[in-house]
Every structure is written in C-alpha cells, then in structure tokens.
Amino acid sequence: MATETSLSDVFPLGSRLDERGRLEIGGCDTIELAKEFGTPAYVVAEDDLRARARAFTAAGRNEGHEDFHVVFASKAFPCTAVLALFAQEGLWCDVASGGELHLALNAGFAPERLVLHGNAKSEAELRMALERGVGLIVVDNFDEIERLGRLMAAGGRAGAGEQEVLVRVTPDVRGETHEKISTGQADSKFGFSVAQAGEAFARVQSADGLSLQGVHAHIGSQLLGLDPFRVEIAELAKLGGFPVWDLGGGLGVRYTADQPPAPAIEDYVGALVQAAHAHAGGAQRRLLIEPGRALSANAGVTLYTVQSVKQNVSRWVAVDGGMSDNLRPMLYGAVYEAHVADRFDGTTHCRLAGKHCESGDVIVGETLLDDPRPGDVIVTPATGAYGFAMANNYNGVPRPPVIFCRDGDARVVVRRESFDDLTARDVS
Image (cartoon, rainbow, N blue to C red; front, side, top):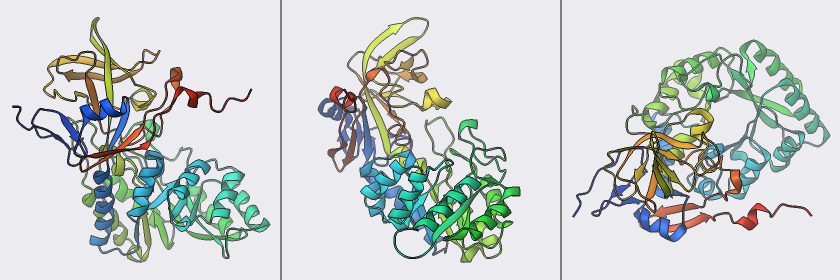
C-alpha cells in the first residue's frame, strides 16, 4: 500500500494523495473526476476559495482598519459560481467591462459593492454602470471624464445622488514582474501620470454629477515583494487627503514548488495597512484592495488525458487541451508543474504539449513525469486564475467545464461546451 505523500502549497488547501497515490481535490479522486466529467476540466476546491476570502478580510480587521474592503478582481476567474461564492463571503467585485458587470450582478453582488475599471470604457458601458447604480467608477483618461459628465447631465445614475469616482494614477512604481503585466510605470496604457493628476481631479470636480472620492493605483501583477506596494502608498499620499484609496491588487502566488513562497496574505495586508497608517490621515481613509489570482489561482487545477507519447530529441507528452484552456504559458511564458494524477514520483524528463496546431502550444516546457502513457490523467496545479478567463475555441476546441469539489462531492458549475455551441451564434 502506498504511503500518503504531502503536497506543496501550489495545490488547493486540503489536497492530498490517498493511500493508492491518487490525487484528491476537495475530497474528490481526480481519476474518478476525469472519468465522470471528461477532460480537459477545471477542478476547483470550493473550501480553498472561501478560506482565502476569509483570510483577506480577517487580515484587514486584525490590523485595526475597520473601513477596509476586499474587491475581487473578477478578470481572474469570471465564473458565476466563483463570483457568487465571493459575494456570499462579503467581498466587493472589480469589473472591467459591461460583460463582467453583467456577470457580477447576475452572481448576486450588490451594485454599490462594484468597482468599474477599464482604460477604454464605451459610452454604452458607462451608461450601463450608471443605470445599474455601480458604487465606484475609476476614470482613466480625460475623454472618459467628459463622457461620464455628459451622461450624468443627460439623465444621471440609478436613484438620487452623484456618481462616486476614483481617478486612476500611474505612480511610476515598478514591481519585479513580466513586462506584459506591469502597470505602474509612467508610460502605461492605464491611468493618468502624476503630472496630470491635478488636472484630472479638477475636471472631475467640475463635471456634472460626479463626486471625486479618491485615487486608484495598480502597479502590476504577480508581485512577490512587498516594498513596491509601500512605495506606491507613499506616492498616493502626495496627491492629497482623499477619503478613499484603492490600492489595486498584484499579490503573486507560487505556481511551482521550486519557486520561492509568495508573501502570506496576512503579511501583504499588514504591509499595506501599516503603510497607509504611516501617512497623514491614512487610518481614517477607506482602503480597498483588489486581489485576483491571490484568491483563486491555487484553488484550481486542470485535468488532462494523455493522447500520445513520442521521443524526438525530447520526450513529448501530448494531452487533449493546451492553449485553448491555458493561454498563459504561450502569452507570457508562465511556468507550471505537471504530474500524473496517480503517480507523483516522476523521473522521466518530458515536455507537456497541447493538441493545437502551433509549435508554441507547450503547457510545461520541462517536467518530470512517471512513465507517462496514453490514457493517463495529467494534473497541472495553480490554474484557478486566468485559465478559464482566457479560454478560447482555437482549432474549434470546445471550452472545458468547471467542477466544484467539496467534502468529497463534485458538481458542475459550468458545463462543457459542445460542438453545437460553436455554431450557436451563426446567422444564415
């Protein structure tokens, strides 16, 4: 009988290898999940999502800042069941399009707990936000301020009162991350430069029906050091005594056991709150943070089935998914680990390839697998952020289902797409 093997924290909380060496997520046998629901499949440990949401909110409370709110960056996992779970846990929600706004409202978020972002919001999206009574709109450019003011003058928002607004500022603070997910530098597509901030504040204050509440900044994603966040807050403090600071998100996660651990949620929140309190009036402000991947990435895994194994220069293990269900490795070189779901002691050097007609469709460039064979179930952990969000139909491949697991029970929360779904929007 195999002995139980501990798993690294790249896997969802509570994951384990059972006595037969099979991976369990949320108490569910992943081999059995693959048989029942097919592959590829996104498998999510529901209790992991809840635990991380509660850790974030508790951390703010424990730091003694009552007006502290956790805003889920919904782009990380824009799935109704995920959004509904976070709404139940009392989180707010960050949306960056009319579609994400629709999803958040449909999932049960109160409109006043929504924060609308985006560097190119259309008039239709702004009108939708006003009509639905979105709590905060983060303005990104002068065109948007003019457009929003005009819409307010023409009819205003749902209910009485002004629309509360934050001004997004790029504080010229860089964290160590990939250039494609760095947003705090001066020459960013997002927000106003520090030099433009004063004029942006003045224009919001002079626009019809807009109430300037404060500032927003986001310096990048997948950040594993805390000092850039402290510098960000110091720069925001120079802009004035606004009642609201939205500090953005960006806390990174660990994708492989070989990577150094990310800062603990408590350390991250503590650093932000303490830095805010260190600046004049910071303790009296409303503080918002916008974690995305830090809430959902390690709560999910993706299951695949091996289709072929061949030896060229490398040993290529090809599975039934790839860049249609996880675009991140191809988009900006994201690194993952992989395992045979019932044989974790891998010794064979392999390259895990997807099924798509692109040479770049490689999920894991170098991994150790235990004698992989066709029919084996492969698991890649830490896919609970941006896999589902970026899923696509390249090569006409239907998108995978989302399976929630808890206490040994599994349920489909998003069904697998069918071939008929691929033609459902066609107009003859």
